[in-house]
Image 1 (spheres, one colour):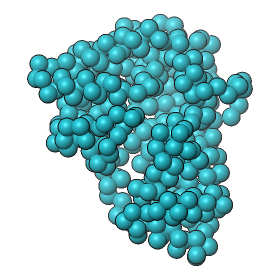
Image 2 (image 1 turned 135 degrees about the horizontal axis):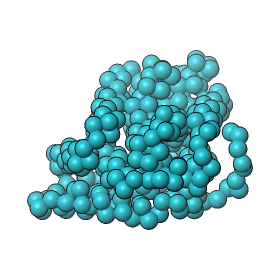
Image 3 (image 1 turned 30 degrees about the vertical axis):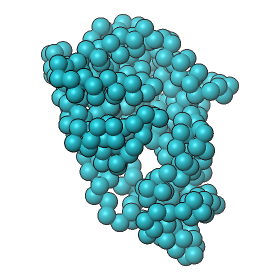
Amino acid sequence: MTGTARARVPATSALREIQAPVAEGLDDVVAEMKRIVTHQLPLIEQVSGHLLQMRGKMFRPTLTLLASETTSSPEPRAVTVAAVVELMHLASLVHDDSVDHSALRRGLPTVNSLFSHQVSVIMGDFLYSRALEALVGLADLDLMRVLTAVSTQLTVGEMRQLAAVEALAFSESDYEALIHAKTASLLSASCETGAMCGASQHREALRRYGERLGMAFQVADDMLDYTGSSDETGKPSGLDLREQKVTLPLILALPRLAPAGRATVERLFASETPSDGQIEEVITLIANAGGIDGARQRGEEYARQAEEALDGLPDTPARAALADAILYVMDRRS
């Protein structure tokens, strides 16, 4: 990557620096999310309250607000758009957790484990519908077009993952299509809709920035499974392998493995409950075959493309924060 280097700081501190130009706006986004999901039905109120505790780092609404401020002329409706973006993200997580039968998310019980899978599916639908209802209230067909297209992409991404019958036949193109649908589409829309609320002349550049940032984000996240420890990631190293999910490091390494190495990987994927020893052995094979280094290079290329997309944007605090967000995505440890 080009650009000004920055000393490495903890990911939480780096994110706070990125969010500094829009910190007050993010507080408004949280309040707007609560307003949107408020409902008189006690069960919905109970589940909504739990979900808002799980909202995480607010990275996507941060991008929306920053994009709206790239020319220092943000519109008030950017807060509602940012809330819609985060509610759509939460809805996708609720559905993912139900599909994967996950018990924990960010250290808290998932909706499906705390309530039921039925409640989880219906609550995800509720979040989507309430988010889109709030969007209708803005009476902007163009905003609706962008964000409803993302809701389709998120669903298609999940179906792509479920449709992959033979895991080890999952190709680079399959992987790119998957992460574009499940991750990059929403980050792209976060930035594009933000631009539509104050910096419309930079809409295409910010859409491209968000898309490339989203691709880098997911590659970096998938690499953590091979390079992070449980203390850093909050999940066991090798969790994707344990769940027999194929990501870029494995895809890049497979063609380079000797027959014995390929057989070791196949045994792991044939095992109902892979052992820690199997996981460690396969991670070592992937690293030695260059899968991790290759994935890192791919992520850095996406990051470089995201940085290039910011060329031509005015020199404002928001633009500087968007540039720092690239470093945050590539350097984060959780």
